[in-house]
Length: 279
Image 1 (cartoon, rainbow, N blue to C red):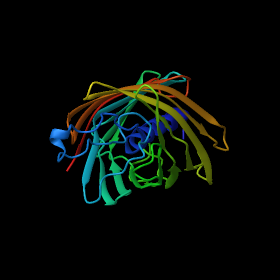
Image 2 (cartoon, rainbow, N blue to C red):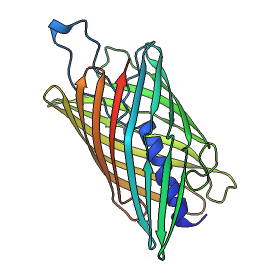
Image 3 (cartoon, rainbow, N blue to C red):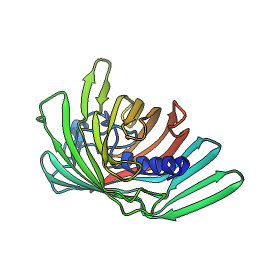
C-alpha cells in the first residue's frame, strides 16, 4: 500500500477508535441536595483521545457520537481529508463496574489529492467492540479501568486495512489539587504488519488534564503519542489536543475539540463536534 493511502487509513481508523475510546472524566460535581433523586452526571469517553475509568450504570444505555469528525494529513505532496459522518458508540451497563461498547462509523469518506489528481473513497468504517471493567471501588479517589477491545475489518481497503486487530487500555483518573483531574492512558495494540505478513505492537501513551468551569463546562488539554513498531519501520506520532464539554442536563452533553499533529506523519489537524446521552 502506498504511504499516502496507508496514513489515510491510519487517520480514519484512529478517528473511529479514539472516539470509541478516548477521554477524561467529567468533573462537574455532585447534584444539589434539592435534586438528590436526579441521575448522576453523565461520564463519557469523549471528547479527547483519553478514556475515562467510569462505566455505564448497570442496565443503562449510553450513546456517544461525533456529529461530524474531520481529519487532514499532508505528506509527500499528497493531501488527505477524512470525514466521519457521525461515529456512534453504543454502551450498555452489564454490572456495577462493567459495560460493553460497540462503535462503527456508518459512513466515512477519504479524499486524497496528489499531483493534481483527486481520488475519493466512501463507505462504512471498521467495527470496534470493547469491554470496560473498572478495577477500583466507588470509594477510591483514583479510578482505574481495564479496556480490552477488538476491531473487525468491516471497512473497505483505503478506509480500513482489511485486517483484524485489537488491544488493551488501562486508563487511570487521578484527582489533583485545585479541582483538576489528571488522566494517564497507557495502551498496547496488536496491529497487522504493513506488508500483511504478521502482527506487531503499537504502544500508546497520553497525559490529559481537565478542569470544570462552573457547573456545566469542563475544559481539557492533552498530549498523546503512539509508537507503531511495524517491521517495515517504526512510525512515531505525537499530537497536542484541546476540548470543551457542556452539560445541557445530567444525561445530555455536548462537546467540541481539536487535535494538532506535532510531527510530519501525524495528521496535521483533526476537528470534531459531538453529543452524548444516557437513558
